[in-house]
Image (tube, rainbow, N blue to C red; front, side, top):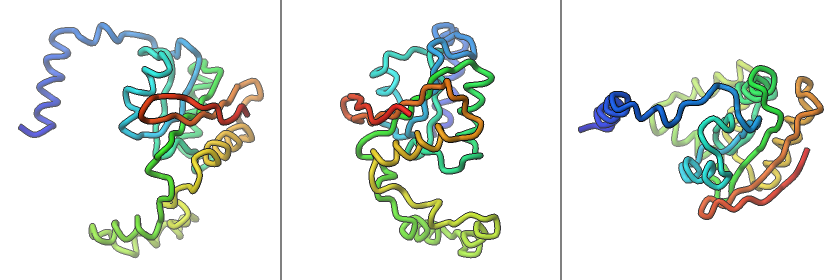
Length: 184
């Protein structure tokens, strides 16, 4: 049985047995927070457990590295929607130690693309849209600095209200221990 078949069979049973009722909540975050976190699989259940978050407590946005790479991109848009439309009052940036984005090299990333038959002309096409593929695909050299840069970008954003608290953390992906990096 493929994972898709397994997943669909589980889902059918989940719905039939009304297991979803344990997760019912509203679309508004009860604790009025929005979290930008890394998509690392170690944090899937660890992060909410380590923060004592239940379903409905927070809006959680996940991406590679817990970074904002474009001031008017989808992550920043989601943060602003959480603030203006969904009532969030605080933003937590939660990156973690031992992140896959740490020291990621664009050259190696692009080489993997080429090995999987992505044509160089498609990679070069990013330049026609004002994007530097090498900059876009490069990770960061220091997790703490990455959190500082992300919190600063969010704080300085022209559409971010001054009364929103923005706090940056680093999490240990093994224990869930949080270290405060900054309040912006």
